[in-house]
Image (cartoon, rainbow over all chains, first blue to last red; front, side):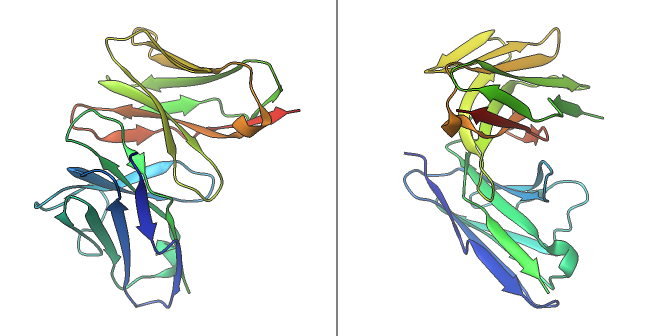
Length: 116
Length: 111
């Protein structure tokens, strides 16, 4: 149980284009989903928290107009990187939790984004 | 500001021995602490969660301790196997569910 999928697993796009990444909880309903970014040899950095049906809460320094998050259902959240630039190239990982608050998070396999 | 430190050096041990990984933190009072395993190019896999009012938790060959006075957690893998080789991440959480991750410790178990 507690399986989270991400699609695509990797994507290459040209500078200036937008990319959408999907995160799905396959066998449970995820009240809360989180989006992280991880650069090589570095720790996971939380970008935003989203609860189903409400606006995402972004961490300090994360541009909400650049990283659009939609959590339209209890099993799906999407992250759209708008007008991508090479510095946005990174490993994007989502996680999902059964409920709000202090609980274990289940992570997706990640999406490798390369912007050329 | 909040700071989490894990063993900065990679840990190399012999198969069958116990691996002990350290997670220290400052300027934070977490409601709970989690340990994850991460393999290269993959997302983290949840291992154990321990809450602030718990001292120790076990799961099969894994044991985690949590000392809120020392602001430290120890993560033990007993009877280690080469398949345990991975990067292990410590993460601190607040009541809202938000996690802050350490940089991870790379463990290598040699046969």
